Image (tube, rainbow, N blue to C red):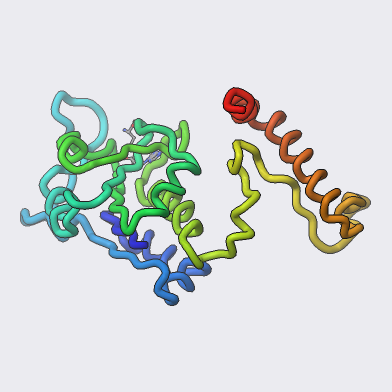
Length: 227
Ligand code: SAM
């Protein structure tokens, strides 16, 4: 799978692609990426990429021409273009799974007040929000998407790690424990120590339900409504 990222700050995004598990996935040819600097497509003397909003108001807006140049340079009209923005639809694990099944996604990193609406009208397929809060940069929200997608791609991490994760079957994950057996007087639940797989599975399912009902009653209600 390929991630094409349009940004004014490629160095922020590059750090993720060259570190840890992602770096290994790139090295093994499972993931590829292309970082496009939007400023390379600003042709005035000062290579301006932002301007004041029509109608007045605070802040600046990313201009349409450099963004369009960057998008055309990667053939964006033929690709799935995603713009992370607080005013998008909620980003979910289901959408991450959908993106992981594609050959490529193109991400636009917003800045300032956002991007000229005509870029959204002409190029963007999906506007998605990573949560009900406002970040200052689209690099961070794009990296959230990239991180959630690439780990689902074949061969990046073991399938087993993905099976009982949070959001599978509308349930959150069960608690994990590792050595030592006693930490500050707290012991590992007995059931995890006895090697009885059926009982462990049963305990884990109970914990998943308990945690979902406590932390995400909305998910629990959804699960009940579709059963
Ligand atoms: N004026 C915009 C609004 O009120 O919706 C906020 C712009 S924000 C300061 C700058 C950029 O950060 C956005 O264009 C977007 O790319 C990114 N961003 C901020 N919060 C986000 C969120 N919750 N989800 C996705 N992207 C976000």
